[in-house]
Image 1 (cartoon, rainbow, N blue to C red):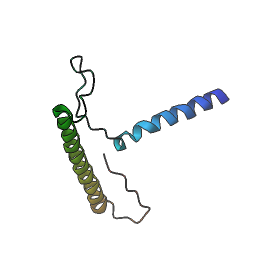
Image 2: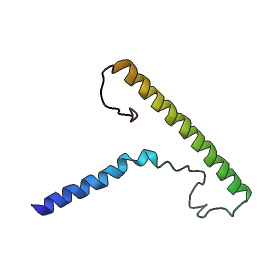
Image 3: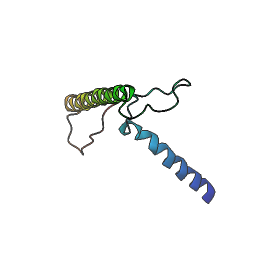
Length: 92
């Protein structure tokens, strides 16, 4: 019986990490492929391009996330006019 409880707790612990994956955004400026196995040398032209790509992707991600949070708050304001506790998670 204790073994099944341990397995259930382990499964719940592993499942909770996937729920937080949206907070661990990693930009993908460098393309890994069989032709391109390692990172380019520091401060090379390709490294500068990868760095700028990461900056653009992060800015786009931030704007999209802020927009989704705003839309979630507006939907909550419009459709949920009831007093209660604060739940500030976005509606995905």
